[in-house]
Image (tube, rainbow, N blue to C red; front, side, top):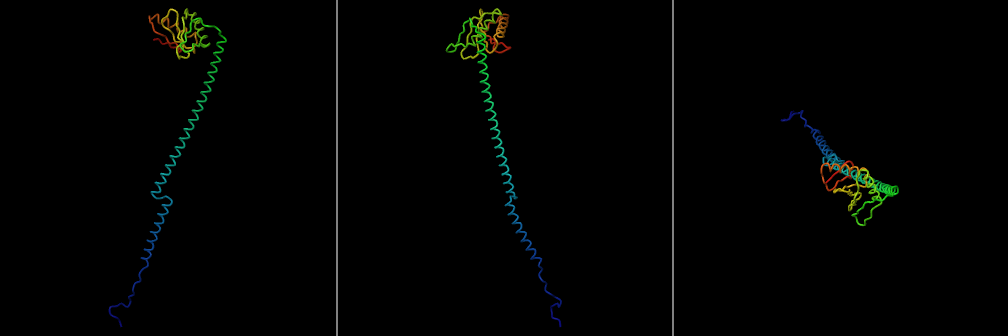
Length: 215
């Protein structure tokens, strides 16, 4: 006998486990994503971590550059010290050689000048080297029919000598570092030039080799 409203073949459907599996998968993915994010923060793979790493590399680069700059400054300072030391040694050597030459010059030329030497520096202590140089000027001037009247050693002008010739109004600036013969020759040439141009300068500067200035 059949019952009303029913189906003899009806069986209630069992709920599928797929929904439960989907929920579990979603939950597992959430947990994995969270764990991955935490790992990324620890190893610096996030945007913030990458920025920090870049800043760290930049700071390391700046520190290395400053270290190299300090090293370069130290090297330059050492080079300058070496150059200064060499300059001092060479200066002492040159001064010693100059003193030796002066002594040899005085020994080889014991002549004394006959013209007056006016020293404008305090003490009026004319060196032997200067006296020998003036004596040579006198001797060389005679070869060009010139005669020295007197010479002046200007105040605080090392190696500079003002030479006055007989019958000339202008004076001639000469250097004891240059040869007396060439300077007398230059003076004679300038005298002829001035006379030919009817010029009357105050002085003529012959201290630079190959050049003459007058004022």
